[in-house]
Image (cartoon, rainbow, N blue to C red; front, side, top):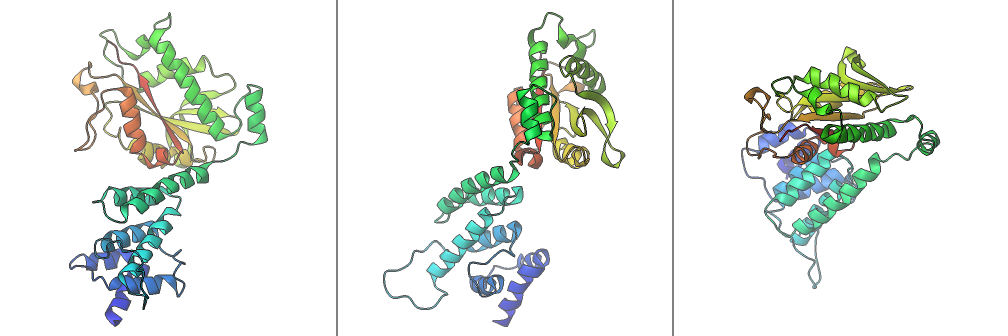
Length: 334
């Protein structure tokens, strides 16, 4: 009894260390009761001290040891019955669903993808509700100034509006590349029809964007927080949106949205966590040194710019949480 109590306390106050110790032997089913009593502080529905990682471990560790069991029709005694375990595990699942963070969403996805059992339906329902909660938590109603700017077709006055505006401008550039009468696509290729490097492509993109973004200052390699330089910055008044640019061949193609743009440039006080991650897509008819940098092992390489965009978005925490927008510029030539 005392040993299980200390183990339960360890899982609450020194989770990583205790989990490492428990990894060497099977977890005892009775540990669930000690965790329940220690975590709830005497109030079975108060589990706010448990984080997403702890909740995921508890549900994973005990769902097989305590299969879903409904309340019996006969008289019930005690609070350590199989149905009490099921009730507590469902409480843990619902508690995980109240955490409006990507870590909780990832935990619920992992739990839902496990071998189906009596808890799977509850996990999937909670995961869907948690997704709605996350969307609501990051939504910020537009300010009066932002609404006025939109109705008067003025310069964006907040970061979300500026981000949406620049995505629209990038869509216009995409249309120009596909079919304007000045062959805008040529600025991305040299005389042998090989793609230029990232900086040359970025500079040509800047020129195209400047044709249709009145009132917004577009600059290359402007200084952001901690003396970092974003590939493109879009400034309107006191707000500044960074755009990080990568060619499809870049070794950090699959990590840069989070590790570079979100972690470094979007942290500038004028960016407030917002940004655009832009990738130049040239397809597979290019020299080897400009071919698509393949995703990690076990993932199929995208064959279209739309597939690349979706893969980048699903693999980026910042994109899933709505801070960073992904745009893939299609430059593939037939």
